[in-house]
Length: 158
Image (cartoon, rainbow, N blue to C red):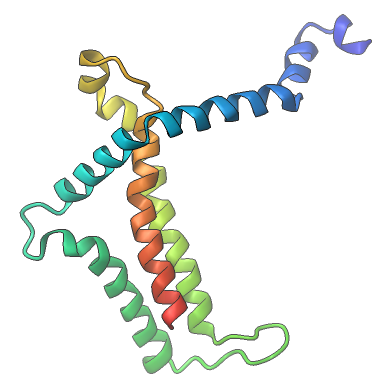
């Protein structure tokens, strides 16, 4: 076999084998299931800390995506009067497509920014307590799912 003769090819072939990835996915899901209470508590604390000291408090977790989407609806629906759509290729108006893209952006952008540095920014937790560091990016995903849920609700109502 060619993988036996070339030293680096065996490592690449083992990476492409799906059984190892399925097992790692199962282990991650088991960890998330076992630690779900802690992840949700950390996410709740992060949401309340993020908006603490602001005038409307945690309302901004819902109000921020609501306000941004209302601005997009006003700009593209009223100011620019975009009425593109109604055809077979584009069955909805242009504003719906803008809102769908904005919903994905509002939820994905903070996750990519915060989960990339979540382990290093919470190094005091990792050094003091014994827990799985994979919970920190999972907490960021849960926090972002609040924005995703609000944004998806706004798109559905629109």
